Image 1 (cartoon, helix red, strand yellow):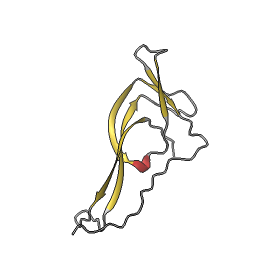
Image 2 (tube, one colour):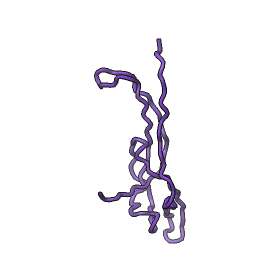
Image 3 (cartoon, rainbow, N blue to C red):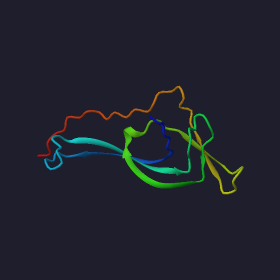
Image 4 (cartoon, one colour):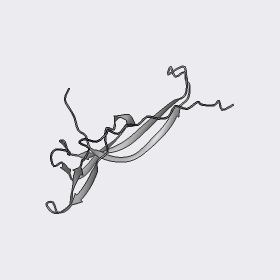
Length: 111
């Protein structure tokens, strides 16, 4: 397996419950936690081991929040590029990975 790194800005997190539905084979209400992330266009590499920078954001994607492995920071500099450049700050080496585990709820009927 090849490690792949992707960096972006977390725009928001949304939690939604899918109601039971025979058509979609959902027997009980299911909680889904999703994240909208806007990619850091051109930010490639492992920021924990090398400098990773970008100058603009790209497209936004919505994904399951469990696919977010860690949270990193960014800092803007105008030292090299006059219009500014963002550097990823990743200090996650040797720390715990981010884990999202939604609580299990007993749902009540609406009637």
